[in-house]
Amino acid sequence: MPPLSPLDRLLATADNALRTLSGANVAARPCPGAPSGVASEPLDEAQRRLSGALMRVNHVGEVCAQALYHAQALAARDTTLSARFESASREETDHLAWTQQRLRELGARPSLLNPLWYAGAFGIGWIAGKTSDALSLGFVVETERQVEHHLQGHLERLPAADEASRAIVQQMKEDEAGHAQMAEQAGAATLPPPLRMMMRAAAKVMTTTAHYI
Image (cartoon, rainbow, N blue to C red; front, side):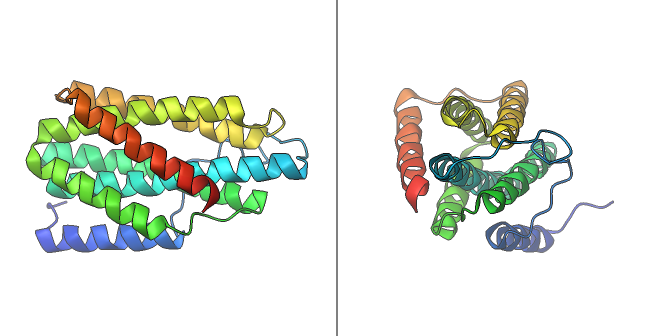
């Protein structure tokens, strides 16, 4: 298949944004917490609210992942690297669909600020990608390491009875580790400490806000 033209890539990116924000994405892999796999015990109201809030935060993370990877793929100078970003994005699409499904099951809603999160993440990914491929890859490594840490925290906070949500989060954590490894092997640059601190601060604002809104 011949490579897409710049216009086609731009249209594909716009289509992804619309599908991400409308909740129209479909997972290619079965949901780890599906009824045919891991069954959850009934949750009381407090447990359901907590699980819903945590999964909303995770869903926001996947909205941002779509924006980041598509922006980086669009901005990448190397076509092979662009394809790697797109491959990682497809895996993140599974996460997006799984968390969306779990939110519905818990009777919870996605964040009302998803368009804002998407736009901000896309801008960051675009700037990183245009600066250099090595910096863009370094951004992936740091982001995924932070996400791994964040998901581990959710595994510790999710109700023990909520096996469905826990199964989803565990699989997401394993996939994120693979994305970080891919970026390291592709030649990621080490980000300076001030930039890593800024990323952590921005992530803290996002996750705290998304817990409630």
